[in-house]
Length: 273
Image 1 (cartoon, rainbow, N blue to C red):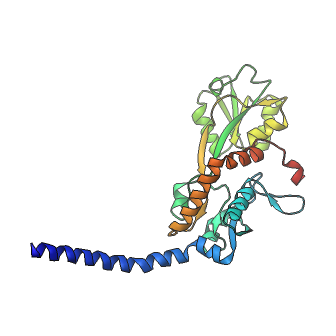
Image 2: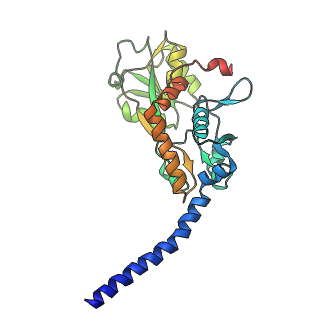
C-alpha cells in the first residue's frame, strides 16, 4: 500500500512540475499574440486588396466597401483604432507572414493550399457562383434545372471556377467560353446566349442594372466557398477573439445586413461615382 501511495505522489509531483513548466510558455504565447500586440499598440492593422464592392475608394479617396465595414466594426468593438493596409492580392499572404499587418480581411476563400501557410477563422461570408439569364432568349425558363437543355447556350469566362461550375451543373447545355466577361455579358444582353455563369456579385449587379432584359433563375448558387479572416499560425488567442466576434455579429444579423447593402443593392454607387 505504501508503495502505491508513493507512486501516486510521484505522479502528482511530476504533473505539478510539468504544469509549472508549461505556464511560462502559455504566458509567452499570450503576450506574443497578435491581438495582445494590437491592444498594446492601440491599433488593429488590416490587410486587404481592392475589389468592388468588397473594398474600393470613394470620391474623397477613403476606402469603403463590405470588407471595410467589417474591419471598421471589428476595430471599434475591440476598442482599437483601424489601420487599413492596401496590398496587392498576389503578395497578401507573404505580407501577413512578415508582419506588415495583423489580419487579412479581404474576401479570402478558405483553400487547403492557403491553410498550409495561414490559419483561418470560422467563415464570416461565402463566395458564390450564380446565373443571370436573358428574359428574351430564356423566356419560359424559370429554374436552374430548365437550363440543363441541349437547346440552351450558357456562357462563362475561360478557365474560371464559374466555367467548371457551369460544366458540372449544365452538362446537357451548349457551353461557350470567353477570355473576358465583358463579351460574355453582351451575348446574354443581346439574347444570343441564354445565360451567364459567373462569381457574385456580377450576375446580381447586371440584373439590377438591366431589370428589363435580365433575371436570375430560381435555385441555389452553383457553388459556395467559405470566406474567412486569415492570421499567422501559432496564435490561438487571436483566433479565439476573432471567431467569437464573427459569431456575435452574425447572430445580431449585422453581417447579413451589410452583405445585402453591398451585394444586393446599388445604393452605394453615389459614394464612388
